[in-house]
Length: 490
Image 1 (cartoon, helix red, strand yellow):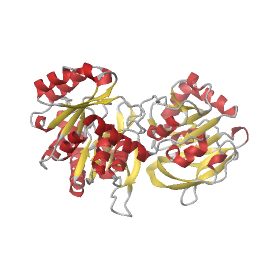
Image 2 (image 1 turned 90 degrees about the vertical axis):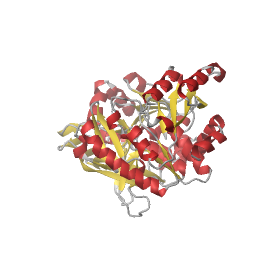
Image 3 (image 1 turned 180 degrees about the vertical axis):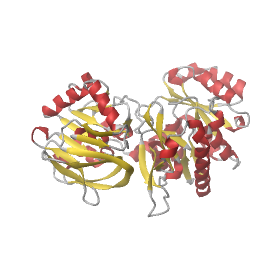
Image 4 (image 1 turned 60 degrees about the vertical axis):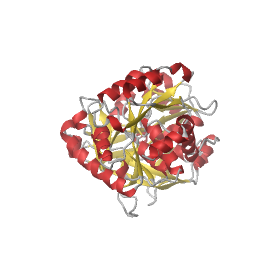
């Protein structure tokens, strides 16, 4: 189990690296996170062993961890997913499906139900696999939440009942205070779980590791827990950050200047990770950040009407329209596609506050209506012929995924359908005339297809498989193969 001394300490990447390292040793390993809070999600089978299984959502981190473990992703790996909609409200996805009733219950009241459901998923997964790599959430030392903390404490006890739990505690040393974080977390752990803590890990270190002395020795003297290793800062690991931080690593020195609008309810930001290696990428939250760019990308949104209002409040709509009218490229993905249209209809409040007709940006002649249930799909799609500047996508097929409750259709002239699903239904449009640079797609995953990325940008970036192998090499180098073998032999 990987615990963190705080959010953002590096739990997800460490768990991913451990999954791949264990898989390379021939272990039958799978990831598990009882509850994830993220708007980065993927579409997977509810039961990976059933070819006709329903589809559901899990957090992207567990999706990538499953690929690292070389097993098929499935819903039991992340049985509870909370998707933030507003500052004080999240949508509850239980077993891959939206549970509207639980979404409106107070957190403490619903935690008993969620814990029982997660424990059942844990038991099923543990019965199928030799080893589980479990990711905690936040910190296991939030004593105000301890009675309801099934994600860290409860899950550790479920694993402990099998008699073979070993936990790591990772801290972000770059932010300062790491020794205090590690010691304080150890001190606040319930006494029955302290023996499971097998070691500390310092993450995101920059500088001379010798300067850490005598901190590790003093920490072990106080806790009895050794420091297993120090992981250097690694920005170019090739995988998305789980929480979708609004910063892009400076990986590409050339390529188009691409601005991704980072509105408050942004979703599926992780799909842009490959773009950071092929373009000069920025995440924009002001109108000035949309100036002097080649592309503007409107990404997915968990709450389209709210993010559209935010875009207008920042004056970013005017900057976007100037860019589009001037022939610049605009790419709308899922919620971004819906905003590009003329009208948004949400009479039942499926996307947010109910409204009869909300005007969109008017760059594509589309109308969108929101209604339950969500459309969840992971299937290849195909492009038809496109005009410049998007002509390099013509006639290409690619594996895409859809997570949306909005249904869009052409409601006038001025755009051509250019993307089609397996049933030959149009799910993407390109503008015409002055707006030929505007492209809207209802699907995610465009930049994760290496061939499409190369066609669009002329760049080849590291493959996902290469990134996963690199992470395993990284942890073996800095923690040591002997330490890792000892962890997995408990």
